[in-house]
Length: 86
Image (cartoon, rainbow, N blue to C red; front, side, top):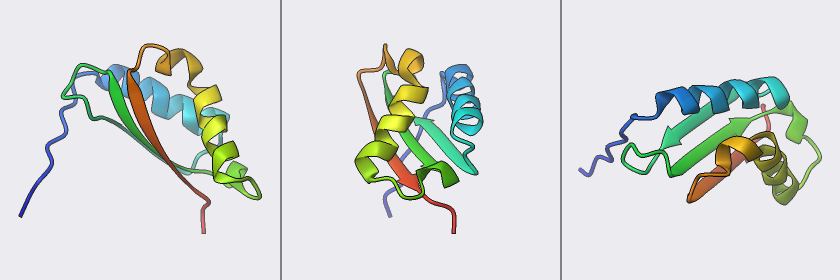
């Protein structure tokens, strides 16, 4: 069994991003994970928000990027997964 280790060196910025997504997008579930090994250059973002209702995946991702434009400016990359609450 393979297990992926996720290092959490930059927890402060992760918390800032999670709080901002919760506030701006009224997210009901937020996961921000540094996948760069702790240096804060790559993130996996998973967001569930009723604000995504009726919007395309592209628009949902644009909303996330807009909400985090300052925080993501120094990131080398990120992946985004969005969902609508059931």
